[in-house]
Image (cartoon, rainbow, N blue to C red; front, side, top):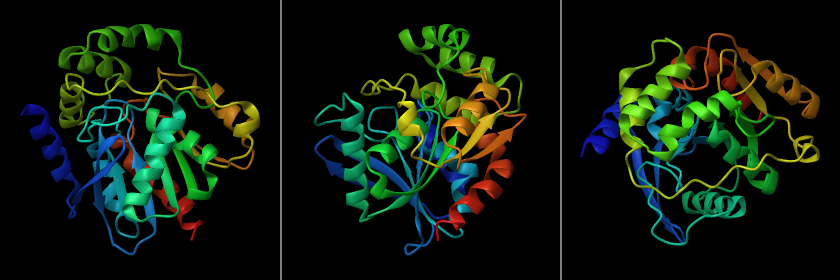
Length: 276
């Protein structure tokens, strides 16, 4: 199958031993790609919508030098996780699923790093279950501090209403704005759009008073078409004054995380080290 072949092809780019885990719970089967020392501090990576967990190929291997990395395919998205049980319909359902995954991995607390929809999933989970989140890193988070731009939503609609490989790749190329994103990343995302999956849980932006309780590391894509980068940075600084905001001036929303590992990793490494 083309999708599975593209998934495996990008996974081989990790260049470290990857243990592919299957965890079962009330929602179905969750697929986790794990690497790094078994006794290393746990770091959970959550991808953006449609990206699938191999998208962390330029980040996970470097983190795995010190950490036990768990890159998870979302149960409500394309990938190798399959929602064969109860359907997650609310953020609370998604949080229950994440807690089940941590339980299945034998993890009490972990650092979380998510991109886009994965960032929203990680942030809302941290708000609901702070006892299970050591550190929270958000890579150009959407529906967390600010909403999506209308032109971005309108441009995305065809690929959402009538998903196809061609529409997905066209949309990503439009947002990436000519940056040299790896063709295997585009191919996997394009094929993922055609895979049957459970509809993702609709994001709901947290209330301001909730955002004041967290101090995440936030990466802001300077050329993002998904949201206003300057407004995102201002909102993070205003609502989470203890947070760290890192501007990635050349990044777009969908060129992250794969194309900007050299900018992400130094700041992410420092942030995670402080949790030890």
